[in-house]
Image 1 (cartoon, rainbow, N blue to C red):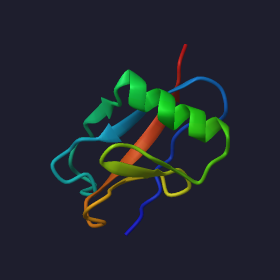
Image 2 (tube, rainbow, N blue to C red):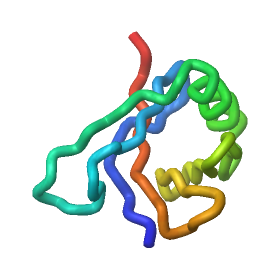
Image 3 (cartoon, one colour):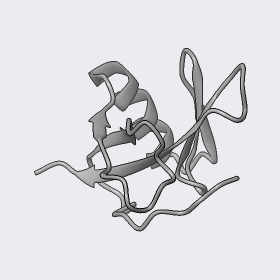
Length: 87
């Protein structure tokens, strides 16, 4: 199941994060936004700027429209993602 999160998805230079909370879909649980590594962030950002629908990382796919990270081997392992403009 995909859930959309409100976040800044505009063009520019961005830092990408994934929600590392134990259960990222529980509304009353605090989010734990964790930055992607510099190399993964560059891969994600480059694909985002090219208006790709998804990008492949080592163990995950990133789906931009759904704003979701999905594990390659287990589609049930999903986590919300967000993008923030670098200042």
